[in-house]
Amino acid sequence: MKTEKPYHPASGYTFLILLLLLLGAAGATVYYLGTGAMVPFWLVFILLCKGFKIVNPNESRVLTLFGEYKGTIKQNGFLWVNPFFAAKSISLRARNLDTNPIKVNDKLGNPIMIGVVLVWRVEETFRAAFEVDNYETFVKVQSESAMRKLAGAYPYDNFEDESEISLRGSSQEVNDELERELMERLAIAGIHVLEARISYLAYAQEIASAMLQRQQATAIVAARAKIVEGAVGMVEMALAQLNDKRLVDFDEERKAAMVTNLMVVLCSDRSVHPVVNAGTLHH
Image: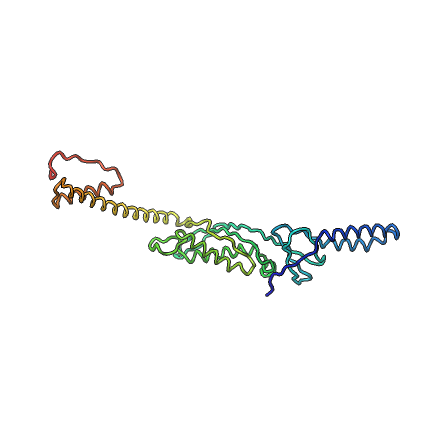
């Protein structure tokens, strides 16, 4: 398989001076031989003018001669090449591809919407020009294909196993995997991936409401567990301090009552209204 090879063109300014000299010679010939002698000069002039190329920074020209690849110009400036060369312009600048979110299924079969942002540029002009039909379309199609594969490899969220990689909870690992996948897919077209990351991620509309309730329930359970854990520690600390300072002597019944009251106060999600007992502890 052929690879990119550099082509070193001649300076365009040198040939521009030659053309000016040619025009001077054509004028002298017309003066001495008549206007009919201008025809060969005009043919040579037009042919040489076709060889001029202007290559801007971060641009290239892929040159072919009657279907044969001759090389790639990456040198910028005012240049001149064989006028029979066919030149195809390929930009070497970095480009962004922001895909529209598409509906796919995650590892668990849940329909989700996912979109990616891809930063890429052409690195190998021969492959971009001749290995694929249209390298820009190739990038778009392969990006969508990589999105579908990535979404099918991981669940949207890890409700049960926090160590499992998920699309929402492990963004760095998922983005690294997406970048590796795209680099492998786009290498055939000479494309170098600078960055790839998920730009949009959400449940599909038909299950978004149910999954939101599930996420809220999971968060509530986790918060309640944390509250209970803290409340138990505070009750233990209160009983220990009261016992150490001997402020109150508790029997098992009184201790159970105090623990119940403290747990209600600490775990309740509403303000607690105290009840003043004017009698004894048992009445």
